[in-house]
Image 1: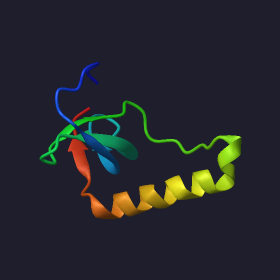
Image 2: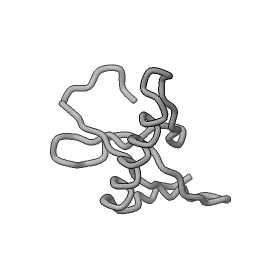
Image 3: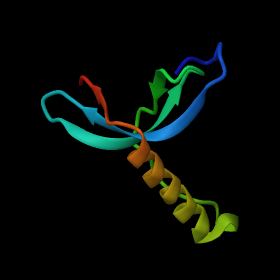
Length: 80
């Protein structure tokens, strides 16, 4: 991702289909422009951890959001 973002962006979780010789699906954080166009996504699939102070609820809340987003946004197909 670029170091300086010229426009305000938002992000959500989204399933990405990675094409290529060994295609697979993975859940990523996807960043978009204000108008909803995909700008970038995390290089590695999402992981779910929480600081001790958040308790296990920190993980379950993140998982709930991820599931809701995965059911809201269509699969993003990318090459390679």
